[in-house]
Image (tube, rainbow, N blue to C red; front, side):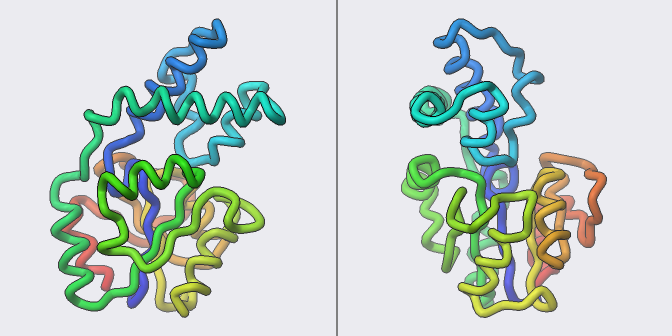
Length: 204
């Protein structure tokens, strides 16, 4: 493979809990009580889709998502790179491997993490929520990233941690690599099971 395209949350950084706890806090502001388990459906889908599933539309959805982004930052200190990932990305960069990001984060959410973690050191392009006509689990965002990176499904792989990621890779006709440090198994096809970040080096 010559082109690696990555999800972010649960793949590069251990931020899933941050967003779940933030969403839980936001829902309390609306006098709604949810367990973390109740809110796990939000992992891997755009924040706008989460808002819709929770019954928010239009300006109310925009306001809720903005509040969710703000509330999540209260837990930002708990988020870090998964151990070994920075080193693996640095080595892939040294090998001149083309790399991109496909995420369900909106622009505001992405910019917070991009500034903190310095994604621009490693990735040549990023496809955020709504940059493509359809979001994951459709293949559109991965196809857009491949187009920007001058890649084809034959020389690319999508790396993620959710069923939604696996479905998007399948829809785009791209092999999927599962980050088992977050999710041990999914139902959609998996071409590569990654046990540790160092396994990324075997893909390039």
